[in-house]
Length: 165
Image (cartoon, rainbow, N blue to C red; front, side, top):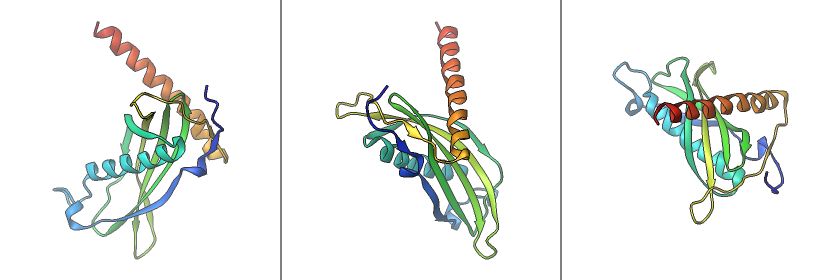
């Protein structure tokens, strides 16, 4: 457990980060290239992790990426990311991306994902990070669900380790 004071979710969250879709963002099906959206989520999740931990952070895992709907040309993407929970040196950041029609204001939920980051000290060793304080019922739900996802990640890692011995 860390002796650092806990921080509220709002201290590091990113809300409605805007990215305008242009033709170079499109794939062969004339929808937005999913890899570009994933890369932007990873970079923004890094910002959340480093704001929370006050340390250099690295991506340790990405799981549960769900593409729910395509984004199209001329959409505006809205990225929302926040820290769900922290454990020792690791943190889970949730990402939700919406596509907005800039002319009508209509939005569609297009992606949800979870990123795990680890904070590192000056020698590149894991360092403890502050606990996170949920501020709303929705943040508390995500805080509680993060523990379930973490248990699943750890169980899978252990099972794969046993299988590969």
